[in-house]
Amino acid sequence: MRDQNIKVSVVVPVYQVPHALLTRCLDSLEAQTLKEIEVLLVFDEPAEEYLPVVDAYRDRLPLQVLQQAHGGVSAARNRGMDHARGAWISFVDSDDWIDSPMLARQLEAAQANQADLVMSELTMDYGAVSQPRSYQPQSQLFEGAEKRRFEQDVLKPQTGAGFVTAKLFRRTLLEERNLRFREELSAAEDAEFMFRVACAAQRIFYLPQAMYHYWFNTGSAVRAYRPDYAQRYICSMEAIRADLEEMGDREYCRDAYDSCVLYHLLLIAVNDSFHPGNGLAGRAQRKAFRDLVHTPLFAQALRHIHYGDFSTTRKVALLCLQARCYFGVSLIAKVRHWQFRKFAGS
Image (cartoon, rainbow, N blue to C red; front, side):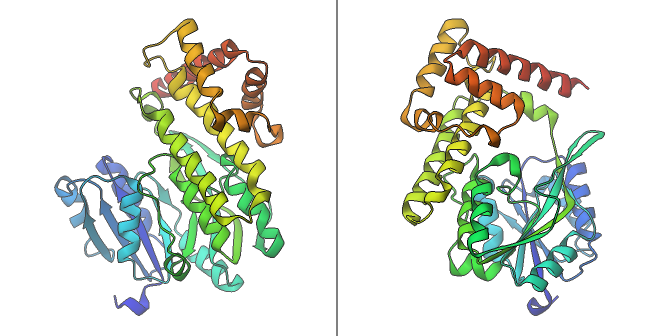
């Protein structure tokens, strides 16, 4: 396919994904009603073991196969963007899949609304259970002053606006504004990238259709404890704060940023501070978490809690933090780990 016929470049980072899931992903790309696409498979590891899967699609999909030493998903996505030839870019993770009309409908919406970015919805798939997300019930074009709300919502993880998947990006916007993933970030890198994109875009269109399927790997929820978990998220929060300071004209995003910081503090509580594998217990565990909470990053955000940005469970956890009831937070974390084990065993 000649370059001028490629409308959408689909970047698919691949790292330690089961062959069956990669096959499902590629099947969904082959089934797209929009045929003027290319698929860039970016292997963030040696590609040899995947060749039987890849070879099956060489005559069925316009493929570019790229390989790099392990550098993380951000580096893989950047590599894919560097080689993209389409006017638009879509990111699909290798263990996810998309409905057949997704790219066609997103492209139609982008062209009809002269948008730089199109957001549609995703469905969280937990084995046999599916849970569609909804940002809002109606379609909307965000531009001018109205775009401020979208920029704020990118910093609120529960809205889904900060995910890089289920979106279509105008390639010229990314290139002209040098919008790339920051490869030093390995957690919440989506939100940091999306915030810069949302601020740079002139027109953003929301399409209220759930056509992207996010595969929730229950095994990953109970993965081995990572001692760098908290630091990885702290680095991303600091990067977003640096973005705000560099822009200088996004004060209206400060409250949303505080909510973003607190959301990730609660993730740290579950997956680091009160993780059963972190080597601490009882008072020592709660003291370490208290010390973390008192660092400037989190202490500042705790002075500006916007409870409407959080689910009921997270509201309870934040109330415990305000009351300095760290035992309550530890109890909520234990319940969450029990849920993880239940999911993994179901």
